Image (cartoon, rainbow over all chains, first blue to last red; front, top):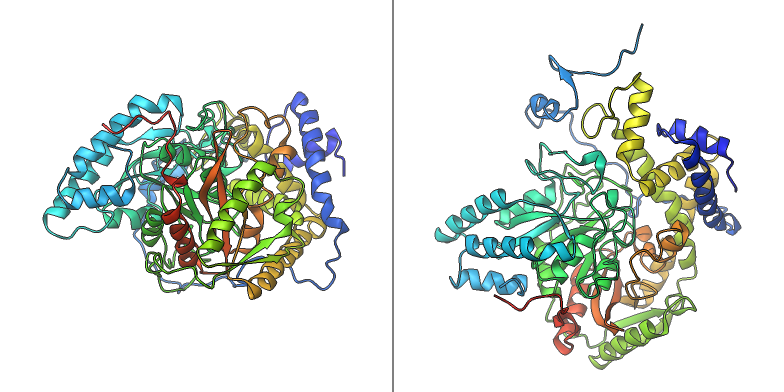
Amino acid sequence: MALENADIENIAVLARLQVSATETSDYADSISSILALVDQMQQVDTIGVEPLSNPHDATQRLRADVVTCDNQRDAFMAIAPATEEGLYLVPKVID
Amino acid sequence: MTNKTLIQISTELSAGNYSSREITQDIIAGIKARDHQFNSFITVSEDLALQQADAADARRATGNADLLTGVPFAHKDLFCTQGLRTTCASKMLENFVPPYESTVGQRLLATGAVCVGKTNMDEFAMGSSNENSYFGAVKNPWDLSAVPGGSSGGSAAAVAAGLVPAATGTDTGGSIRQPASFCNLTGIKPTYGRVSRFGIVAYASSLDQAGPMCTTAEDAAVMLNAMAGFDAQDSTSVQQDAADFTADLNQPLAGLKVGLPKEFFGSGLDPQVADCIMAAVKQIEALGAEIVDISLPNLELSIPAYYVIAPSEASSNLSRFDGVRYGYRCDQPEDLMDLYCRSRAEGFGAEVKRRIMVGTYALSEGYYDAYYLKAQRIRRLIKDDFARALAKVDVIMGPVAPTPAFDLGSNTKDPVAMYLEDIYTLSANMAGIPAMSTPAGFVNGRPVGLHIMGNYFAEAKLLNIAHQYQQVTDWHLETPSTMQKGA
């Protein structure tokens, strides 16, 4: 399936990626060629075949809901680009 | 001094020929003197390494040394290392210093192994040539005009050049086996769930698996012993007792049934690579194995299915890089949306952005069934192919890649051409079975690896076969001319 520039612009918004006008047509070309490769799948009859999401068909293992490690707040805040008084700083969200 | 196997260094440390501090200093000096040719390291951690080496020497003095105590190794730069930057070869994580250690890193540190640095890779492990790195391409020690393979290309080049005896890698679609093949190494991708993914920067979570890259099968078995084991912190870790992967190395191969899938020997395969592989198979036959023709009819579908599943899972995993909690943040964001979109656009490289967009599209409303779910159904067909084949034979052999290492720059303009290079490796990740590469010859001076695949949890069997093959061949002991002879 060939993508138009407008499709790329829409995908870029969903993916939270800024894409320039020149990049948009490059991505339209390369992603269209990837989708052409991927579309080989549509030739295959998979009726009745269960999707495989884990190679062992395992389900998510759950742990007991108990605290297992100390509070790491300072260590995790220390690597953030901008913090203040234990909070992450971002541009103003609400006027 | 660095032109040694891991077992040799371990033995010489035990014999007291030198201390861990001495071999660690020697190895770091070698990296500083020689790695400008290969660009295999992103970070060399001299101070931390010497602290670990001193601790290893002190541990040895108390009589509590393990096989790996004091032995230097390198980590692919996507294993989180506490206090040591972990870049994933991305501008996004150029200055990221993890506050914790991966489980694999913890396990290796617990044995007393010494991490000397972090190796180059394709950004976020997305690539088959190690040309997608923010820190520049890696060059193949066997031929500096060739790629080392990817995405664990820095680990492969570092071991092949004799800079370190062993390195960690990860394999989502061939990223251990293909660079091992291109650089004449022994590399193994274990069964999905064997090695904990905790603290490894995620690419495609249902496919990712970590493993060792070494000179010999014996070294790989020793490394895997340290790396593998159940981990409650990884919800897909398999609750299996940790096996001793060295236990079966010396078993004879008499009676072994080896399947050769016809789909691995089709028209896309370089005839000279095919000759190397068939010569290796003949040698394994001479060791007592029986060779059987088999078929994996859905092999070709592994490419389209992989290039839906991996980008889909990547688009989800990489959504965590938002410019807020850690990693790159753009200058002067106008608002929150601008902060997200520009931080990600400026922080990620072209191939990473392409895969995020493919994955975002495949998972978007109205397309999920036609892409992701369809790919998962095909994934089951591939798994069923292996189940049928492995009911008849013990292991499957073939080439790792259609050609030896290709020239730097030869595949960078066309992503689809690069994706087709992965044809023989993707299916093992799709099925989740273990698979490895072992050196099997050269074509025009560039190495060729023999691909050995087995049933779930059959790593010891694969390593046994590679070890027995390495007892009767010298390919794995060949060294490139770029490697200086030992100091």
